[in-house]
Image 1: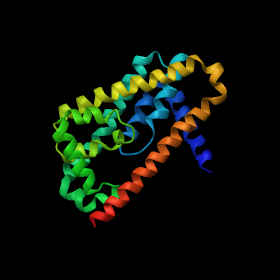
Image 2: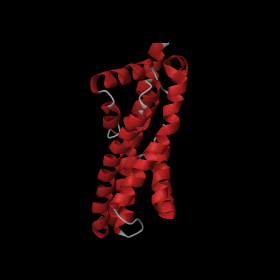
Image 3: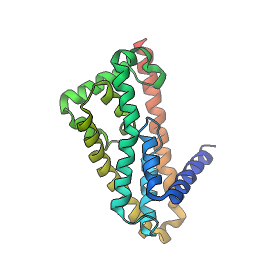
Amino acid sequence: MVEQLLALLVAFIEKFITTFGAFGISILMAIESCNIPLPSEAILPFAGYLVTIGKIPNIHVAAIFGAVGCVLGSIPSYYLGYFGGRTFFEKYGKYVLVSKKDLDDADKWVDKYGDWAFFLCRMLPVIRTFISLPAGILRARKRTFFTLTFLGSLIWSYILVYVGIKLGQNVHTLKHIWHKFDAAIISVCLILGVLYIYKHIKHINSDS
């Protein structure tokens, strides 16, 4: 059952990017940045593969469109936190898996690294999907936050697109494991997602 769901997700990502090209990368990456765990670890490597077969012009186009998508997806999440505020999420955050510990952890990151915390978080699996919400709650400066979001996401995009390009250059020798590779990535992301949800439910219950 899980393998079938993974196969469907991989097929959807591949079909979407094949159909819409670079704009498809932006759309899928925007979805990921809206607190929806659609793994960039599957989106961007396939974009890199499309670079090798000429469906996307080059690595720069794929990476830039990926980073732009991250910024676009971060906007609604940021403003949800900005206007909702800490009090709102301390009261209702459990419905979107945001615990008091998440808010405290975000405070610590910002206290330690300042605005650069948002840059660093954009290059961390799983947490990169959810960082915009606490950024809004903390009222991070918009121009700085979105600039650092773009830069961090650009580096992340370049790395994963490059991985896809290297795989694409060896596609004939790796063809028989290509989909297994995708499935393995998404399996890891799924496990991390389950652990994330489990951990947050424990923290939310302890807040009650």
